[in-house]
Length: 251
Image 1: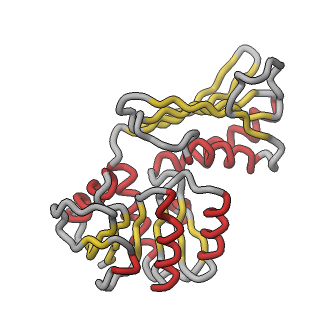
Image 2 (image 1 turned 90 degrees about the vertical axis):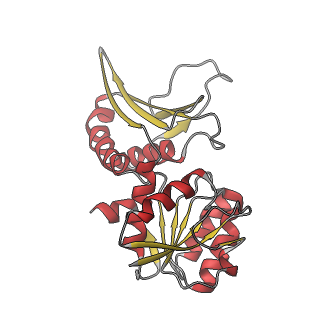
Image 3 (image 1 turned 45 degrees about the horizontal axis):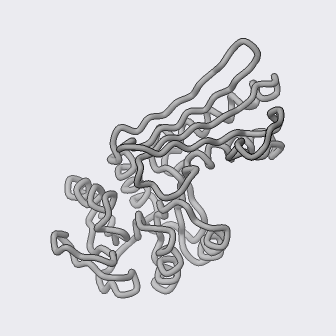
């Protein structure tokens, strides 16, 4: 049994995870953390992980970037592993994550779905062949109109995965409206679309002379992220301090 503290329990993803956890005999949410409490949770709700009195094995975080600093502080104090699903972290916060991983186990992933994590590997293989053959690379991501950060953490992870395969030779371009010039062959273009209730869509285009190859992942439900987060929590229970990824979970 893996006992979880759900950080951001009153948010949409927090509620989805709570529902899925009730159907999983290997998971129990012993407490939640949120700045609001509507009284509908099946577990006690606190305002911070530091206030939680229940014993837990791991924290699952789907909150907001502004809550991450306190979360890391509390988890370090309690020696609690954390599945960190919140995106849009600043460079300073990413440095705090690295620092905290010296004391606790942290699994941080821009996207918790199995499909995206397989795609991260596929685009590396494609880039090694196609980029060297002169193909241009573009990433287009689409999300609902309530998403705060742009581009998405997943889009950046895909770009980073490609760039890693190419030994860091590429730079990213997020906006072409301010300049009028030919496309640089060493760039990866990243575009963001926001609208309606789009759960998540990521498309990677390899555009060459007279041919285009496209990789695409579409999320039809946020449940895929919740399922991944719960599997990550099971994996992280009892792990030594350090940084972990979804690739470790699905290996």
